[in-house]
Length: 438
Image (cartoon, rainbow, N blue to C red; front, side, top):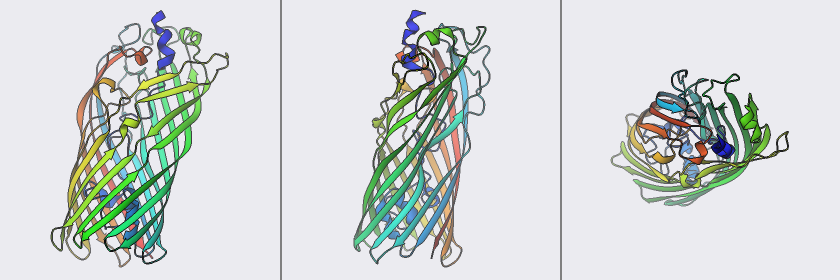
């Protein structure tokens, strides 16, 4: 039992600012920032001349606006996740599968909004403002499930307000940049062990971590038009340095944990959300048919661990830092797509993408059961009037089956025990947008 003196350094609730509950994109990034771009799986996203929503990937594309333009988009993400628990033990090796509840409906349906406004101030210069949710997730497991010491409920929301400017230096070169204000909120819950798999008189306890922060970031980008039929773009969104302040709150904490300083307390956690580097190409094959391609590199290696520092609790004891290892790797997203001008009033799109997960087998957990993804996307734009377009898209996202195998050998699992489960996941995404000028 004394080996659990390590447990505070790996508190059950101090897990991660991410988990698998976002099934739309690898890690926990949200790629559905434009119904137009989603229609061909983001193919050519950093280079497209379709509308101002592409400025999310490359601020130079604000120059797509020749008059004041407003673009409002919403993406409904409908995920499913089937979890099969193969085995689970508490820190004293008590079996947790026989009396465990079902995992429940782990993932939640989520609506992701995006808004863009562009105002040309001259023939060559455009100013803009946008509101996006670059990172986010929401979901929870049922109370009493077999992996409850590893995860119970988690959510993260990062809202970004960006102020942008773009300038067209010539017919073949444009440059843009933005300044972003990020408001991030995190909640991480898990049940806390009683060292008897919930079988002692008082049963398991519960811990909840909440924190938030305001942070700042930027993006830059450029476009090249070497010919009338070729468009090339590169955009970069910077890392976001977060210092989240909040509170850890517990209920029904057992004496063993209390003796180790587990108590309600303030907390602080420093995290770095990843950078995103986007390369885009659009090539007009005919007057009606356009080919697009994208390669997007997300700098997930900025997230190697989550370290939480605690303030003294009511007993004036300070819990040791809590650490959870991510071991994330930088990963690429690749897509290709076609756009077809079916008529004067209708444009059709389709695309295919491969999105590689940053999670490694060694550190995959109940909060990060992430796998590689494949996208199949369709969409279209209907010209409703001279100034207004209605855009819609549908994406099916197939996620590789993965196994979470936490065998209890990692120091951070000293208070969680061991856990082995198979995850099968997929998602449907429906996006609708209104694009208008005035």
